[in-house]
Length: 214
Ligand code: CO
Image (cartoon, rainbow, N blue to C red; front, side, top):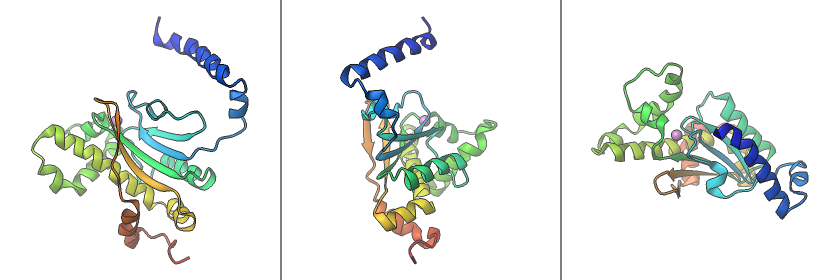
């Protein structure tokens, strides 16, 4: 049987399993969501946001795109952040990258990838910002892994640049911004322990959106 046909059977089993532990599960779910986490990750089919973190429906607001990017002029990720921070008032914003990311790999190669070019250029920009460090890594695999990590870090900076995040953080102390990497080879989720306060202070000189003077 094709996987396409299986999903509907799987869905039925899932409904039954949820109802077996809580008969009103879907009734409760229909009443609203109150997630604590906004997760921004890669579309890669191997990096399953909810599954690998064990969160239940309603606990995590999720946005996924190629190579977990938050480009400055991308209305889609910006809308997700705006909604999650301003309206859902999430406590944590996570950017999660992963090793063996095809998008990051593509940005390391000389190739014309059509409509993907401007999207992946955001990763080439990350490479340019950290060119000295990356070029000093002779092993290509290690350099690839490091670019995955640096891309997560730069996307966290892009999240922190937004007015909605700066405003919310300076008035409520939330959200905190975190960078994670998922290692497909081991299944392990790694916290890059990005110093959010330090990042915020470091970029405020240039990206202060008038929030500190209020
Ligand atoms: Co990826």
